[in-house]
Image (tube, rainbow, N blue to C red; front, side):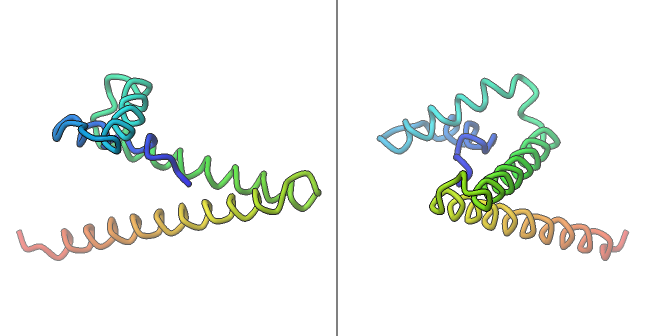
Length: 113
């Protein structure tokens, strides 16, 4: 699975609402680590989209490498199944985001000026 720390906006949400409780402290520490690693320009939309695309691409590459290792007999079947599950979820997310972006674009193009 994609760790929650890869989502750049989680740090902003947790800082806005405060991180209380066990779940909040866990999410807060993961999101803060990502926010600190991303640098000062992590707040803009293009950086967020770029980081998400890089994360998706990395997940797909990792799944491909794990699958190749599984075919060669160097990886456990459980690892291959987990990698393929991660790749499937990532691809479904990418397709859903693409569909939303295209729908928004079509809505904008239908607007009268």
